[in-house]
Image (tube, rainbow, N blue to C red; front, side, top):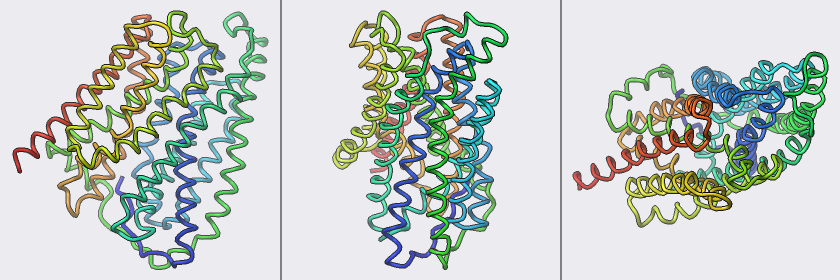
Length: 424
């Protein structure tokens, strides 16, 4: 996925409004992505799923990054930033509306299809948002604008799960789907999934409003220009050791982060941990993502005095230590130990991204595209984690896979830090 090249800066009056719109996009797609952590326990109960089957939610969602990323970039290059954003928002709205037939037919596969369509729209919007926020202002302040925009993404991942837990998990009936069969089971699933439909219908309405507002700015970038190179040109960069290791690290980081988030409700609900009901556990998901938001701002300051590779290795070791504490403890220590991993995740994505692309020069755009496709790790690693949990019968055992991912990423941090010392 090769992101569009920078366009000419918009008219001065419209730039602040466009920045506000891009911040809103970061907030929306961050929040929608984190809602998967709330939907998983809901669908797992209603359709009596194994952990492997439940993790298909994340698999279908993040597969969109691999399948839609390159076509999405081509679409944006063809129609432009603003029209591309409208296309992405409308695709997201279509995904939300697909929850209606999924609920009416009580079909798990339709829920997965709806999530894939929703994620496809998210990918297109991200293709627009990341480069657009960089060009809406002075080049020398682009980094601060992007960091600020990512703060809105983290804000969305913190807020959405809390209210999603109230709306979606709060509607879980005391009756178990496992005790029903036939028409009674179908009726129960249809009734219980109405909470999901209600939430996503609200999102669809909000997305329609945002799309209408963006359409008003469709001609805000009259001198817009884009790259003409092939969309697959960046794949040859994977042969470079530093970049290839960085792309792998992004794959593993997103996979580890999503795996942990997907298991939070199940983990906190266990008797030896905090024995929380689903709704109460769902509300605490916000602490995991909120920790990432706080850690991002703290980390941005620390990065001014600590080498990025070294800090990356340190936070990975911290994540592994917290996972070890959580899985070898009980009660609140086990619960909050897992939630605290979010703070360790905070700087990982931007730091890995910058370290991997540091020496690419004019090929930075190609590298960025490949890195974004590597987000597909959010589909693969959670599914593998679910298989481990089902096979072992232990969530703690399943969490060993994210820990292994962090170990590999720590190696990338050490590799880049050592390389920097040798080149000094």
